[in-house]
Length: 68
Image 1 (tube, rainbow, N blue to C red):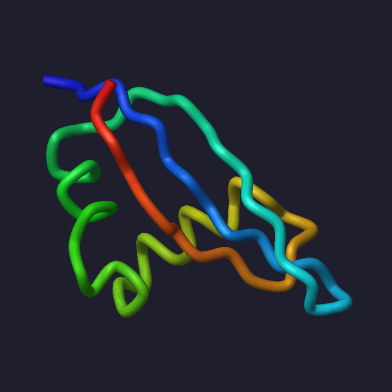
Image 2: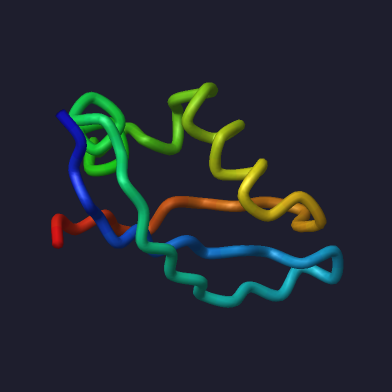
């Protein structure tokens, strides 16, 4: 089962400035729960996945995830 969700990322550039990026995607129920978890910043696989979405960014953090 997949969940259609809008994920809001804070994407930090090489100069340290951040900008908000939104992506709409289909996630597994488990991945959606991970994105909404309070410890999402400590989840290494989730951090790695977010960084792959923006390969040129210095850092990427998941801000919010909402079901569509």
